[in-house]
Each structure stands twice: as structure tokens, then as C-alpha cells.
Length: 300
Image (tube, rainbow, N blue to C red; front, side, top):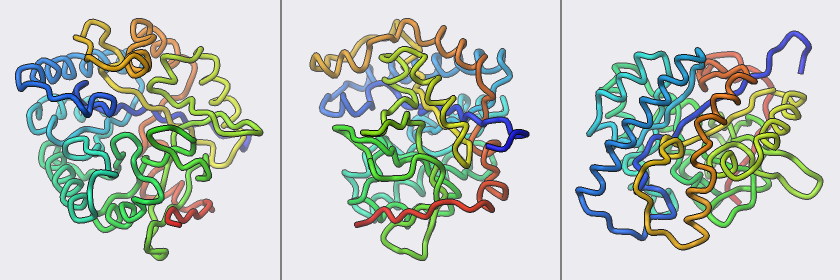
């Protein structure tokens, strides 16, 4: 990192109702239960907007299209507060469960809906559960075709639900099945060790690990080029009063451990970084895209 540069830390929030999480994908929630979670997602997101406003911290909100359709006022509030709106798919379906045609329909429907609500272009996409992996490499081509400028779906770690452990850990150009088609990829923060990349970007890692581990990852990442770190969270992780889903023991622990301290921890974290949205940090029209980035081919 050059001495005159300030490390950029992207704050991002995946906005979906709590019943949509991958650990609960086997549950069949009633419409009334889904409505309760929708209302709580709205309330939790508005609380986060207040926290971000107090800290003058811009962020990117990846929104599920169905939630945007039912709560357009919330999406406009996020946009009017100066934050970036991006796509988290239409109904939070894992890309692994979609074929290429269904995926193209999903991202186009979400993108069109969000753009109609805020009256501005949508540049970014994040797949539910980081589900763009080598066997869904065709999704990169589809995103380029749909007009997206960047993606944040490839997590360079080993995990039982996702991950591309050999992917770059800093922003890179990614191509899918078509080598001539490339997309700017901005992966979540990892803590690199001699043995493996440790996930420290947010979500459960933010709640389960000591905050010092994430802060160590942020500190070390500032010495890599380009010096951009990305963190992610979910509004439901800041709502300890929500009704808890009937999950198996391990999933229940992963989902709810540390949730009571999330808000205080995020408030403290924001005071220690230079927060940014994706567009502000990477300037999709220029700066980062004009630098020499690693090129990575996702498909085998």
C-alpha cells in the first residue's frame, strides 16, 4: 500500500428475511410467520440505517427482490440515505439450485425491480450463500450479459456450504465458462495463514470470533494490492428479539451465538475503519478497474 493511501473497508448488508437463510431452507413457514420476519427485517434495517447515519458511514445493501417488491419504501429510504443498492437475487435461491436460464431470469427480475424502485442503475450482485463456485461458473457470464459491473459472490475459503479456496483474496477479474467475458470480483475479507485462508469477513464469523481476529485481517490486508477489504452482515443478526427458527443444534449455534452483542460490536468496529460502499471504494467506472488485477478463471 502506498503511504498516501487510506485503506478502504467496504461495509455491506445482505437484506433478506430471516426465514430465507440457508440453514432454514428445509422449513416450510406459513405466510403469517413470513410476514412477521419481513416486518422485523424492515425494523432491523432501519436501526442499522440510524447507526450508519450517526457514524456517517456509507454502505452497500444487497437486497432480495421479493422483499424489495413488498417493502419498496424501505429500499427508497436506504437509497435516499446515500447508500448503494445492489442485487441479492429475486427470492434468495442458491445458484446451485438454478439452471442458467432460471438464473438469468432471477437476476434480471431483481435488477429491474430494484432499478424501478430507486430510479437508478444497479451495478452489483451477490449470490445467496456465496453460491457462485466452479460448477456454477456460467453465472459469471450471465451477470456480465445482464449489465452488472461487479460481483461479490466468491468466498476464497473452504466451507461446508460454499467457498472457492484457490480463488484470489484481493479484488480480481473473474471469467466463467467464456474466457473472453470477465467481471470485477470483490471477495470477502480473509485472514491468510500458511495452511489456509480463514474467513473473518462478517456474518457468523463476526459474532462467533473475537473482534480482534477481524481487525487483524483488516490490518494485514492493508499491505496487499489493491488495499480493499470487504465485510458483510445481515440485518437479522442485529435483532436479538426475533422469534428463533427451529434449527438443528449446530445450525442454531451458528445462527444465534453472539447476536446480543452484534450492535455494540458493529458500532465499535465502524469507529476503527474508513467505511465505504462498493461503488465509492472501487469506482466501478474507473479507478480499480483501470489497475492491474489478477485474472482468475473460475470454471475447471
